[in-house]
Amino acid sequence: MLTLGIETSCDETAVALVRDGRLVGEKLSTQIDLHALFGGVVPEIASREHLRMLPRLFNELMDEYDVTPQMIDNIAVARGPGLLGSLLVGVSFAKGLALSTGASLVGVNHLWAHLLAAGLESELVFPALGLLVSGGHTHTYRIDSPTEFQLIGRTLDDAAGEAFDKVAKVLNFPYPGGRHVDKLAQETEPDTSLFPRAFIDNPSLDFSFSGLKTAVANYVNAHPELIFKEMADEAALDALSGERRAHLCRVCASFNWSVADTLRIKVERALKKNKGMKSLIVAGGVAANSMVRSTMQRVADAKRLQLTLPNLNLCTDNGAMIAYAGSLLAGEGLYHSLDLEAVPRGRV
Ligand code: KG4
Ligand code: ZN
Figure (cartoon, helix red, strand yellow):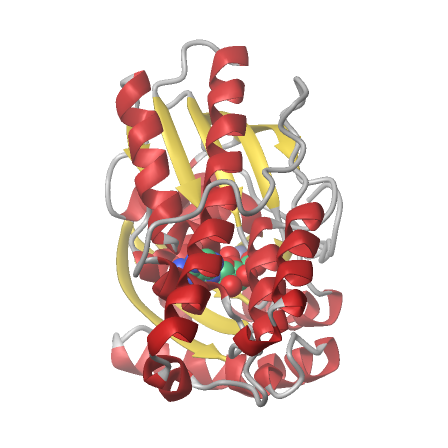
């Protein structure tokens, strides 16, 4: 069974082929440099760029792996959540291809695909507690099988990745800033009393990160020497030295700790409310964060759960996760008709 995956929900255009649960090959083009000029994703630019790149990447994938469109059994496409114009590029392409080849169409929930992605590398164990931490979402799920997801917690305001990106923006780091904050944070120990861990003194499984983001912004604005005058590039971050570097690293580490420890508290609480979980699956761009990874490893070890963390290239948006999730849905006989619609937000 050969499944093509198409991902165009935000600022990565990606295609991949999965055969019988294994990745055959993939192509990805990121728009990060285009959006970096504006400090965030510009929807109009994103959809135009998907339109330009998707047919190109698809042809390259077919050529490189010696596959013809007629050989594809299933066409899986991220149908949401995401930017409407961007999603429509992928969904329309998928429908056209399905119509012309007779392949089956499978609409995939982008968030579920993030959580299932690690199944390409190791066996997923259910029931699982899923923590999805990306630029747009912070969700916890009870996952009973690859097709049974129950949302049990979500952010009430900013997503974890959004908080990373906004803190990075205040400091004038390159966009998206999460990985730069992560890198500097690794150089020192956090000051755990510097920033708050918001919305933890209640029984809720929901998250709130906007107060933390504001606390960091207020701190940084009170220490303007920390802010780069012009947007820093990687070289500028590397070149920073002395007391200013040490201070900046402490701010990054302390903020990173507040996020990671908030995630820990909510995950532990979710595990208490959902007995019998066999594994903990952590996914999405922020699952690439080193402190989040080590914190979740400790949670899983203490609870004797299998921890499933995708490799770094599978954490951020990619086509392989869509192809893989689509192949699991197709394996259950779950297909869509050509009426499939993009679903930018809400229930996908
Ligand atoms: O899942 P993803 O690629 O795209 C969405 O669907 O949102 O996640 C992107 C997010 C961005 O906010 C980015 O800053 C963050 O993941 N991110 C990180 C790291 N790498 C990516 N955040 C913290 N530490 C990292 N190492
Ligand atoms: Zn994503």
